[in-house]
Image 1 (spheres, helix red, strand yellow):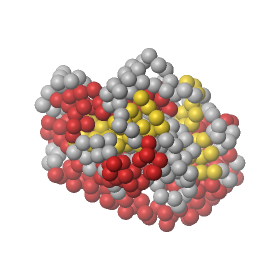
Image 2 (tube, rainbow, N blue to C red):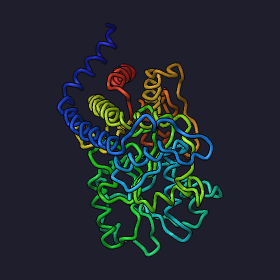
Image 3 (cartoon, rainbow, N blue to C red):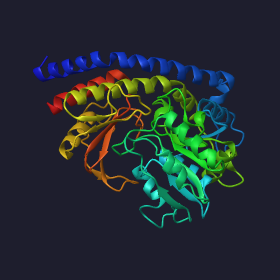
Image 4 (cartoon, one colour):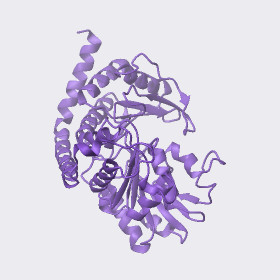
Length: 412
């Protein structure tokens, strides 16, 4: 074995020895979530007849209706809207917000500035595109308290009569801050509902499903949205997203996705249903594999002297591992190395580019079978200080390990 390769393999073996006790916790969460998903499949009597799909208007789609009941059960929600026609997690979030809000209402973010692609949805960038701001919805945001906790006293005091939706971004997004754990979401929801029972607590659930044993609606969130080509699709769902929560709010979202009067009753599923069911069933295991990779990455990069968040032994609520590199060239090196270790497009060299929805140039490494599928191993980051690489996904830990070995070699 060449010296560099031997050094990389030794570094990974040393990291694995440190994190192996931490990995044991993942097995308990995976078992719990697999049991929960299996129970939902059995309760809804999923059968081969639910894989057939529909064409045209998609009326009376038994498989789609069954899948949405399954997802609602898994997410602890009254109802769910699960569709391949959602173009992305951002699309699902936009549909949920446009459904829950109306002109004159206020959207209040209590986890600071939102993820980049929501800036144009809200109207913070790119006016005149039909954003919430163009539609007459106002917006405010409250930063997280020191240490990354939701500032409950400040949040409750900030509620106004016109505040209709309070938004929580569970994942860190492209920010150097902790992600928000389920227990913290529950405390925030309880505090706000105690003084404003009518306020809608909305959670951007992207990257978070099946990382903990509970989901946001289990602890009091009214509405959640996310992408199927992240955690809940298990690396199998070819496209789509979901909205789940209170039945009235899901219905309003459905009317935004299709049209008032049609709502959830329309929308052909074509040949996608088996993949959506299968991906959901596989998701707890795939998420556990991705978390094994993220925890090992935290240990490896920390040992190399880089700041990482979360730390290897820290509790996790999403699959993202942030690695602060403080150098655009190092960010490019890590992204390029992950791309070279991809099964698809390994020969492609990531270059910074303006991607639709983003304000900064972004480096994205994602040699995935499904375009943009960040439950598959990927690494990306905006070209702005402090030049953080956001590593996520991995359908198998073995793939994560090989990519980490290559990163150690590239940075040595």
